[in-house]
Length: 265
Image 1 (cartoon, rainbow, N blue to C red):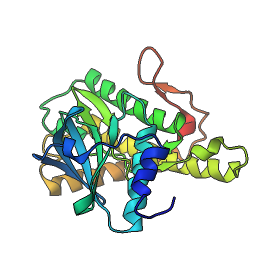
Image 2 (cartoon, rainbow, N blue to C red):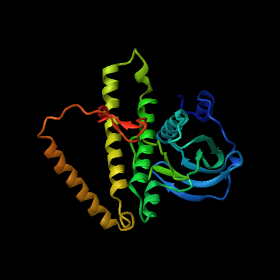
Image 3 (cartoon, helix red, strand yellow):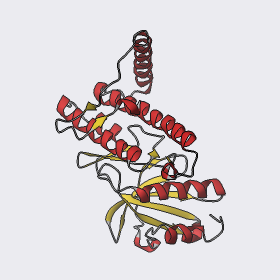
Image 4 (cartoon, helix red, strand yellow):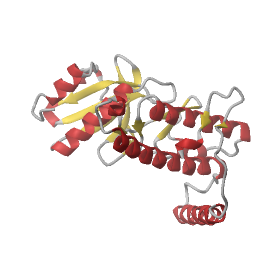
């Protein structure tokens, strides 16, 4: 990629990404999230109705590379558990660039849980299954490691899960290339997948053991998380003294379509 004034046009043409004219994006915007590289707003688009747009101010190569990486990973995804990607846009005068995405009306999973007075086991299993479906798709179909999976980057639309924010994600699609260093690449991807699986465990812990005050009182949150980590550490030491047999896939639904495989750990 030649980082010059035409880089935006290059990714739009080379990757077949829709370039949405900036004039079609609404002026009235509500801030709904933010990260290291961009701010997320709810607004409207003439082509898609209500949308979420992630705004980037790009003034150097690092920001350019991050925008390109996130856009290209978004463009790979085609799954009901991943937030839908519509296209890109830009405000040339202000040097602002946008990723235009599906809007999730129930916000983040963390906010969704904090507003729930109660949630039965069946509902928690349904949500856990949907998160696992999305992560399994990224790992097994796209060779993508999310690298920043937590309840603020998992969105909820009409009660259903949508994994989002690929700002830190890595794509290992070259693993399918026979000429590449297969051992090194597979080992690297396995480590990144293990990181995602660890993050999934933290998400499931929050889902299964959430408290109404957990996300409202920061000191309480820190104490709870510290206790959870100590408990997990002690259990890990206890289990490490035993020789365990290879694990079979753990199915999260009766139809055996969604599962977490032991090899992912």
